[in-house]
Amino acid sequence: MEGKSTKSELDSKEKIAKSLRDVDHELIVMSGKGGVGKSTVAANLAASFTSRGYEVGLVDCDMHGPSIPKLLGVRGEELTAKDEDSKIIPIVTDFGLNVVSLDLILPENDSPVIWRGPIKMMTIQQFLGDVDWGSLDYLIFDLPPGTGDEPLSVAQLIPDPDGTIIVTTPQDVALQTIRRAVNFARKVDLKVIGLIENMSGFVCPHCGEKVDIFSSGGGEALSEELGIQFLGSIPVDPEVVESGEEGRPFSLDEDLKVSSSFDQIVDGVEDSIEAISGGGN
Image 1 (tube, rainbow, N blue to C red):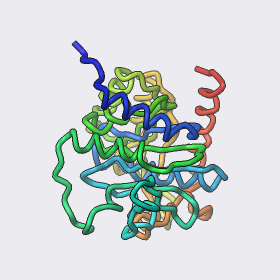
Image 2: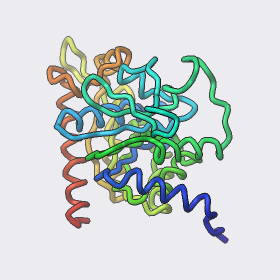
Image 3: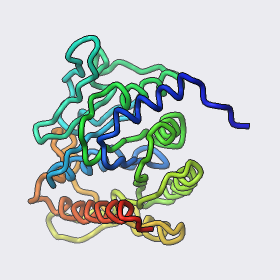
């Protein structure tokens, strides 16, 4: 039997609802397993929306492997508050994206986070209720792999999320876990906006030939099987790796071919959110 919410939990939810009252849309980016490039997708989705003129925030909810600051070029900066009684101020990238991550609090870059579930949930509560998010068009959440404490906490704490975007790679071992992620979303009444297939074929920069290193097309086939939207695929591209290492989102570089592919994915996400907001199915 599900227990009743405690007064502390109710107070926390009320605080979060108040903190996020001026946020129009909340999007959750998750995956069934690690190593599929989920954080890269979340960072570039947030950067792309920012480049389109939206006010955007990005919450790094991966407590044990926070990588968002590295991908966005803000690692080494520190979260602060105006004074002891003020809310935390997000770090703002040079292109205007608001970012919060545990990596911006840790004393050293290689400091391990050895936490159990309750502490991780309290931290997520702080990221939602104690941060001055202000007025945003989109608040995007980058979750750790799987369906454990952090995804459950975010799904339960956000007042009215628009839904989740699930990231996979084409090989069977990744696709098998997607069913769990989709079923998780459905069990917690979280709408699945769509599926993105990352690392979908490598196009040789010299001859233009495509090689399916990790197979391809599995994500699209699985989307059809599960009855969810296939948002698109992202090819294997050395420029993606290089941009992540340099803290420069590839989606902001219009000269990259992979940027064009990703732009179509963002169009699909934007159209889906508009349909949801307008009462579409």
